[in-house]
Image (tube, rainbow, N blue to C red; front, side, top):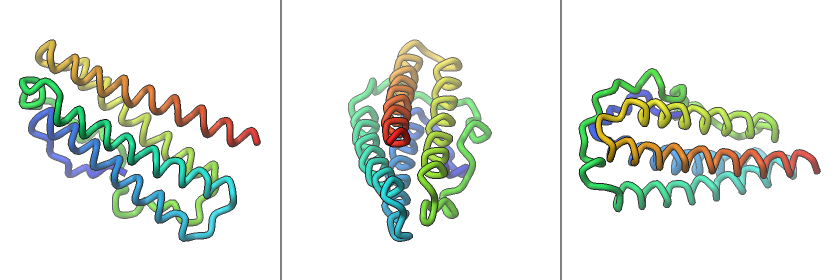
Length: 156
């Protein structure tokens, strides 16, 4: 889902890219409702689209109000091989089942967790490490929250 052509030069651009990913996911999830999904799948699409929009808002605040020194630090690590598979143009939730939707979203979020775990582990300064750990904690927390909600609906 992530654009492999993302060429972040600073940590700020990496965070902005993450926000853009969450916005694009929200759009694709909304488009998934065009295929007349089943009741559970429709609920999931609506919930996830709203969740991705809220994540974008949080990420945007981090990008705007984070430590300026850390945000403007050059990103030397080549992250493209750590990015989720490039499906920006092809990912469609139209006609997907509840399980397929939840699997696709969890896969993308787990890849983001790995991206930020790697970035935090290779951060060149304590300030950058703190910023990357903040992003990592956000993605981990929200992924756990998503998993909990999906499991609750799955059990219905």
